[in-house]
Image (cartoon, rainbow, N blue to C red; front, side):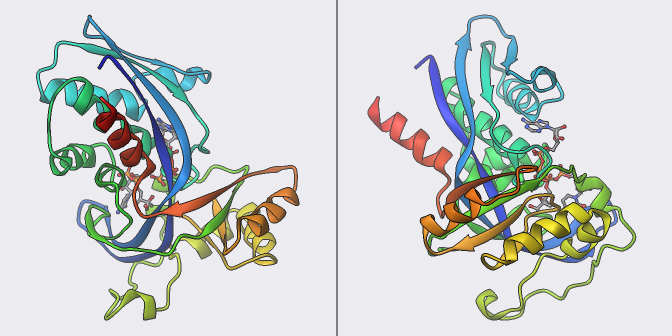
Length: 283
Ligand SMILES: C[C@](O)(CO)[C@H](O)COP(=O)(O)OP(=O)(O)OC[C@H]1O[C@@H](n2ccc(N)nc2=O)[C@H](O)[C@@H]1O
Ligand SMILES: Nc1ncnc2c1ncn2[C@@H]1O[C@H](COP(=O)(O)OP(=O)(O)OP(=O)(O)O)[C@@H](O)[C@H]1O
């Protein structure tokens, strides 16, 4: 196999509780991750030299700062690989939107290159490597919907009924680091005691982000007219959940022109894993 095309799906944090702060600044949290069947597209082509090249319409994403580059370099060094790779990125996910685009791109890169370069590492090992790139990378590498503990890397699988989501990106960028370092962020939500389905669920970042960004507040107010809604991650994207695809699309069609949105279904298994398995079984 010399090439492979795989999706890098979005995630939503259906709730996000912050339980404390570690001495290194990272936060202890409890969050429910689910995947969406919508995401970036990554096309991998093997190279005979050892270069790692990224092609993308957005020149900002072709540099060595891209998590895709960092993931490929990490694996190449870790497994002493002499081959290189050209990766074409078709960016569909809003950047800095809380849907995990960069982390998902990194995870899909680790999963695809593990096969193309014949590294044969377990997903456990890839997740451990991925954690060096970001707290959200392990869940995309493991590929199952989960409640995360720790800084987001300890994963307990869950099985959720599928739902349709309208995800809206107000055209504002929220820095994850700015939220996690803000003095007003609530950091002392108690750990859930008992079944999570019976707990009061919310996103601890939401009220702070709404205060800092009135556009996020307006987005949530708008979505709440249609369905139960919440912010994902540290924002800025907000989502509303619908039982029927048609209702989600009806709301999307009414979306004010200055915001962007998409409709997608939630899934328990990452579409990246489903695509990879389907392609490998074909060969
Ligand atoms: C907010 C979430 O998206 C929820 O899924 C993640 O926890 C963030 O994951 P991520 O973007 O992969 O995070 P990283 O790239 O590792 O870190 C970005 C910034 O968020 C802070 N951060 C991240 C995760 C965490 N549990 N506590 C933190 O305080 C880090 O200190 C850093 O300043
Ligand atoms: N492949 C990538 N795609 C998008 N952003 C990237 C990528 N690699 C690095 N970045 C940088 O990471 C920043 C955050 O991007 P990302 O889209 O992952 O945020 P996010 O959706 O808020 O993620 P999370 O939910 O994990 O916090 C971007 O502003 C960009 O500078």
